[in-house]
Amino acid sequence: MRTERTEAVEAITVDLDGTVLQYERSPGAVLEAAFERTGVGPLFSVDEYYARYDEFAAQSDSMDELRSDCFAALAAENGYARQHGRDVAAAFSGERDQSNVELLPGAARVLDELSREYRLAVVTNGARDAQRRKIDAVDLERWVNAVVVAGHDAPPKPDPEPFERAVRALDATPATPATTVHVGDSLETDVAGAAAAGLESVRLSDRAETGGYEPTYRIESIGELRDLPRLSDAGGYSESDTGTETQ
Image (cartoon, rainbow, N blue to C red):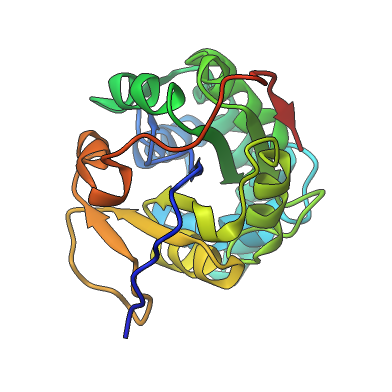
């Protein structure tokens, strides 16, 4: 049974990919182009890549290394030479521009409004270099006060540590887990991780299934975030510190 919280929301953490921004060309389309460039049949599906992404992000120093190791492993598991996977990864890197991203519809307006009332932080899994290029490409730091790229200095979501780091980085409010809400599109990483860290969660999805993880709230578009009752009144944030810290 969910307990109604009475503490005013002071801070909001947001996931990156699929929550506030998206690639202009989907990973599936880029992977298909990479298979065509290397002249090999599909060695694995984009869903297999998604399923292993966080595992390899936790042990890779760059996006190119992540994909090379991940694609080699997936190729081998599906009965192909590991080198074929590395060749596809190289072709994928040639096709993919990490700065070729765009904010989701309505995200700029919502972030602009919320940043005037709350402390904001990004909590994202992934390779640091790729995530930083995406953040820079849409100038996300005009709104956020801290960025935590989990997988290196902190374990990847759903481990609670990335959320705890973000809350500590927003302590000028002061923000605490009880006064922080996390917004993300993944049940397994965002909803589960927020709960483990003691945060309420908002799942951004047009699907109602929970998979055993129950978000505090669910919205179908980022534009609905501002209408949640918990965020309908201004928080206690005073604009005394607007610097951005990257964890």
